[in-house]
Image 1: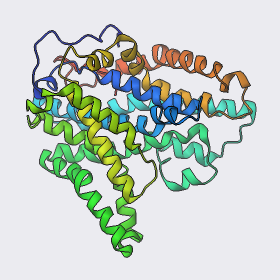
Image 2 (image 1 turned 30 degrees about the vertical axis):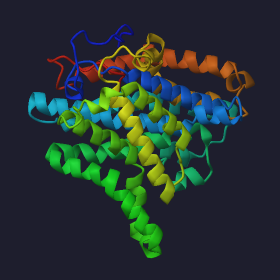
Image 3 (image 1 turned 30 degrees about the horizontal axis):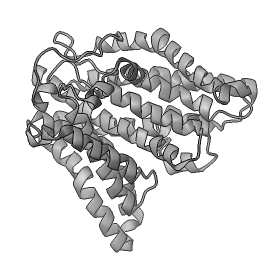
Image 4 (image 1 turned 120 degrees about the vertical axis):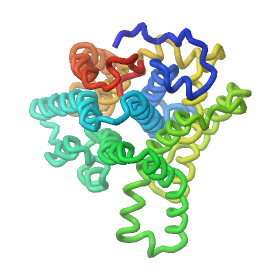
Length: 375
């Protein structure tokens, strides 16, 4: 994907429903760029001052990725359904595999080689957990915690979501709508009842809520895409004081603080953060001249956003790498240089080949494709 595709459309767009049908989604690359900067800076742990921990919250950065992912992929699927009359699950999963698997498995192969050379002693079952996208399960996160592969928990959450929900969307858009609505609005009420009635927080009920609650932010993005696509967000009041509301939304996103631990409070706080993040996404899809829009669509931030998946995969090795690795690889500022170089090499000389293959399985390839950071 060429880096000069960070411009905004020349056509005059005033409505969210018009923006979501366009071939280019403004601001999404920039939001990805901000999210990955938050993750990397959090992992670098350059300071323990409160301002640093608030501004560079890795969990919050991943949560932004989740909302973006749900919004973007649902938008792409809805546009495919509108254009072709159906949703090709075969092509969807081929595209998903070509986007996620190549660099994810390349990283594991490189890590395995480093494990052999430097005797990192990473347990085999940790490799298996990463390979089969189950690193979010408590067993893999609690037992023999291995930081070099722990970031695969977020990949696991996404892949588990996309194994199930595209089938629902293909079968019935209404069923998909009520499914994500349940996760976003009803599930918090179920969690509240579990707090009040302890037997509901055991056994199958505990398993049920813990499986679904991890999809909360992705589902929020999905719900916003559905609302935008169906013209339910085409209201002037959403944009009348857009800059001021964006500033307030961003303030509360950081002030509330994303909670990575499951709790009754976390379910509600994280939901509010996801909704506010969704507002920032939707409100900045419509081209504007304000400072927030210009920042999100700046060339530098957009470029970082395009590289964000590569950076996310490789940064873990250089920020949480074993002490047995050469010190210059895992300490600042050498690790930042390694992250930048390896991620760029990975994207330009490896991933782009698979992204080219991925485009061949787009049902919209004869139309005008939506240009965003690869998903």
